[in-house]
Amino acid sequence: MSTSETRVDGSVLSPLEALLIERECERLITTYTQRLDLGQVDQVVDLFTDDATYEIPGVFCFQGREELTTAIPRRLSKPFRLTRHLCSNVLIKIISPDEATGVCYFVNYRKDFPDANIVEPALVEMPHYVGEYHDRFVKTVKGWRFAHRLIHLTFTDTPTA
Image (tube, rainbow, N blue to C red):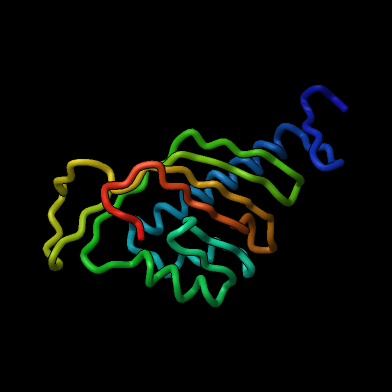
């Protein structure tokens, strides 16, 4: 094994293979936030495995394709809402060629409007949420997907219950 190779779960990955896994997982995080911000909430469920878990402890926990398909749009789609998610400090740990974990910080700015007259730039005093995404990724026939997404809220401007 060369010093530039990565050993995971009995497998040896080249630096390029490891980099590609990390990049695909990072891209999944970005795709998730962009779909939310662009109002494509109904497409978010496609980023999860069929048996995935999606949760904020003490607030909600959804499991499986059927539950996610119903719950994600109901929970995350609001008319006349403007949001932007900012993710940083992304750290991906490769477990095997088909599994990885990750953590990143996120900041969510949100403004709800009373009607379709959405004004940009929207005036906000502080982020709605600041927290961490804790993810388990798996490689599927459709590419890398979230098998588990746990959202840890560190700061919020409103009660979460």
